[in-house]
Image (cartoon, rainbow, N blue to C red):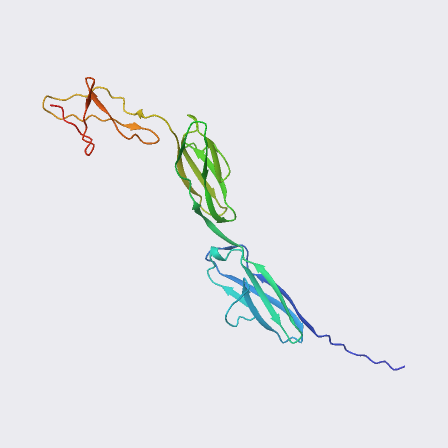
Length: 238
């Protein structure tokens, strides 16, 4: 018997895979993407896109991005391969790790006793930042772990709060804000007696604190009001 063999050549559009030389990519590093494809006929052309915008130039099977920045994080890199039968494409998402930077820093706030106030600490970073809050310089006790901090105002909650943001692989950053309780003024200096020689000048100070700040400070001498030059805050007793 005679036998006949036939070789069947099947033409097909490209089969495409895409890879990146390393991931994640740190900010300002270079990244090279490689596009592997096979097809029949094997004569193929390549086009590269970033977020559906074509990358100018003839890059062939590889695309090198120099000094990628944080603005490119999560952008889609696409390789499109064509032959006479058709086209195929494959994508890879840019994963760029970068150091934390503040978007919103906490700021000083004040309120009445029993009022709830909010402080916001918002940071951009990749991987996503973690937050820790500390109070009055005590870095051994974590007050909260959320970027948004709610505080109910009373004598125990007023003070200085520090928000610290951490991104793995980078230096931590921090910012602080103070919480004040509204109320009447308090005299801060307690020195009651000042001494001076006859004819000499003696400076008396009155340091007061309140939220909102005191509008005026009133002096008296032997029960009588002492007129103060508001422009200079000084008065001379003859």
